[in-house]
Length: 291
Image (cartoon, rainbow, N blue to C red; front, side, top):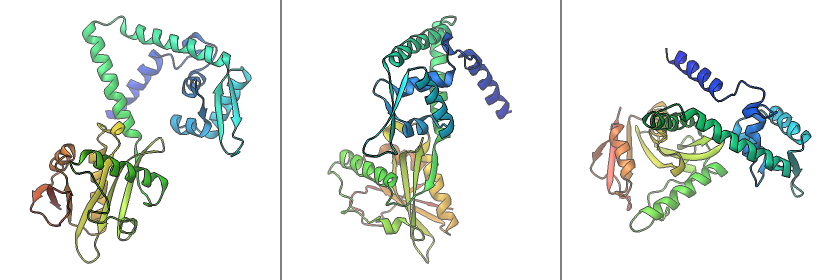
């Protein structure tokens, strides 16, 4: 039933937006080429970034770029300092074609809304925004990551910066209870990093203790751009699963009073507030959950 609903939605959308036509928006090019022109943008874009963003096979992306180069719309240049880095730029005709496609996209959007009442338009746009969020959420991947990688460093650095901004007295990671790289590396612990289109957007960590069944949840952070996707709950569930796999039966965490959304998440996920179980200087609330 759910699968049928998704397939029906896909059929309706692809037909309504013209994705089935060889000449998208009445231009002499298919949708794939039109989208690539849009993503390259007026400032150009690295080819590897295009591949990640559009989740395209390298061979297919190369064929699309060659087609656009043949039409004189795009020029791909190799970086002089690093031959592995290639950047696509729009030519003057490419910028003109992108402008025409941009206008055509506005007209297509208007044609979708025009037959509807004001109330129906609001409902459609609201539903589209919800679908966009849910589709983005379905593309997020979560995996165990070495805390020394660039992706992990990005997440932890952003986490520390946000705490320094939001805590009343700032934040110094060296002043709190430790969660060093070695403590977040198996078998001592684990760091999970969430990515969207290969870009890190969230993290969460566990400290495991040999000989007991308690796991500490640390370093929970979601990028501001990715909030509202249900990623915090998903990360927390993944951490609990990892901890249970290693024999943990009790999960503990502490948090600061300024992180109201985190406190609400923990309570909604079955964590109960308990008396302090450590001397974390930045904590105002201590939580525990037992399987």
